[in-house]
Image (cartoon, rainbow, N blue to C red; front, side):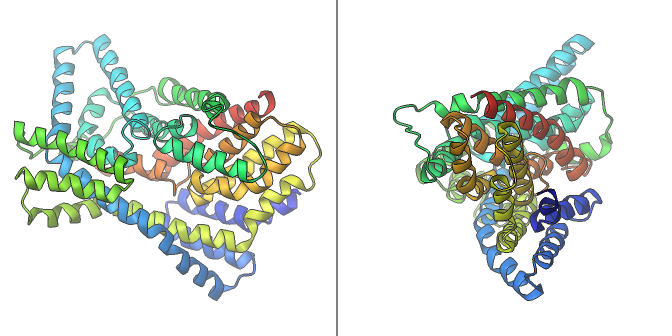
Length: 450
């Protein structure tokens, strides 16, 4: 079994991807090299690997387009002065209460606010990572005043982007828990009636959510508690605002956010929401039609790199599926393992971690593993709640820490606005350590006790 794991093309490809990323090779180059390495190990050949990689790039095009439009949404909202007002209010609060005790209170109040904002981006106002490039760059100066370690902020943002969809059936959580997770469980032999028990997913994922919370508290109060210095001159170059704050612009910003939110909820379309928000500013004459050219270009510059990574990740995922390595991994669970529930649950979670680390999407992992995991859980007499928890956590593991995950790329996009936040060492590695380890433990506990 262990030899099969070590020689599996998916395992080797993910290992290559992570090693090259740790060596600071550009993540897109690392994805391409890892994909072709996996194809070669699986015997696909260069031509077949290239064909699969190229053909599956298109599946990431919609995501990339959405991110470009989200970038434009971010740029146009930044012209309203809303983030400058928030940053200015915080700066005034700090200056008025400059004593150590009050600064400490303001620091942790800010971290709490960021946590709530990031959580609401998944459920209450489902704009996903769009708020990060709008809000975070304007707060870098505040972080500098607090000597705040940005790795703690990266952990906060990643926590808020993952935990709500993992345990609350609203917004993106409704898609993950109800449509993808429970839908795949039922289609593979389990019987979960949401109409009879609409909160079963909340109860099943409560223990894993507590694991995520434990990781967040460890990051804030232990690992990254000490002050960290950054180059203030580089920060000032980013955060000095040229926006003239006026009531009209602020009102236009509020209306644009409301219109964008409504468009996304009613039409389930991020790019339509972004266009609607831009049109609010045009109608309010905050920007002209000609200005929309610059808005889009700046938006592509801001978020386009994430879109390119996601396109490349789609190609990588396509190659991994074509190798047959994903099926081999999940089949290892049902072959060569005894009936020891503890070992089986642990291996299911570990293989879910490997798959999601490579694919970068928990939403895509669940359909790949459910076909094997559900019958195995049933054969071991695991309850529906335990099965739901194990499969749900197996999918979510790796979303934090994966260099190709939106939940890691998003925080980097905001925190690296001044070039002082490394994607791998300041975002991917800290979030991997603080969330995957406690989530693995909590998921194993849930699988054993539920």
